[in-house]
Length: 444
Image 1: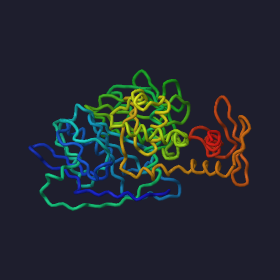
Image 2: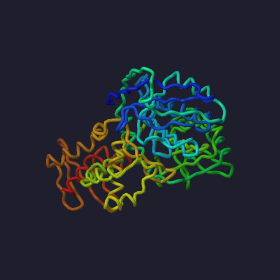
Image 3: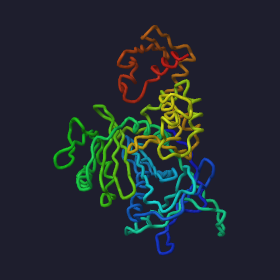
Image 4: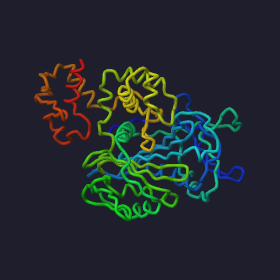
């Protein structure tokens, strides 16, 4: 599992203190499109205890490995710091688990923010051990004072940059691209109130990797061994227990899933006071989001690079991207805008909010070139095309890879390949390199 080095440069560590009688939460920032230490917000944040617990949950997921491959000792990793995006009217805090199978996002909505954002953008935030300990001690429903970054021009105290280096697994970074693709295929399936939500989450098993289905009953939800109409897949149901500390603040729970039968990702969204927490679970406990291949066709599309450049120039950190308006502004068909957004998502430049059924703008504080280069299947497919390994005859193509020739057949129901990779995964993890090569060759 390859890793890239992420360097956090914080002006000072994050801290929790007291200001004008309120808890004072100061989050240090590192990395941004325009400013290495951006200052996104300064003001009050409602529902102090709820928000403190939610931030702790986002940080805890980043330090958790829900799956350890056989024969591998559980690695003790310096956890990657959460990412925060300021979309003007809201703040979004995100993290991935170390195993890349769980993504969590806290959306702090306008009603909780006592004032407008000072700037928009995306950055990492320092959630260090002393701050986590202090957050755990915040109680009550009053507001707290929140600073995301600080205005260094009015800071009179001397400061020095605190630098921390963290090896980020490649699959963790790729997960940010794949999870938005997965979310864009989902629709609301189940919804319940606060009481039913507490009962369901607290009844979940604490261990296990079985694929189960959450099914609605007269009294709430139950887990079943088989899929049924309007059921939601839950692989490794214990992973959903990360929501448990927030249940006392919950006002409801909603589940989203794609319209497929079998193992699939799902989003579980817990509604809070002026906030939402969404937890996205991978289709299997041992299967992270990094290998899903959902962005490969967007990256392979001949028009998507130029379209993405055009579309990205029109984005302005909108909390919800209006695809039709963006298509009109760009002078492109809506389907090409969606493909361009898929390409931008591969570089961490857009996310997807299932609640709003739309994309939102963000710019992950990682090197976009590194993120775009993390797709070996696409690189292999291009190499096959360049080597003249693709011979097509109508709906049947033959692709020579090494000493073996594979047959790619296009039918009304999709494209199939005779390679072992396709035999294992079918269409569940994006196209194999041979299918991609045939598609690339057909486009010339």
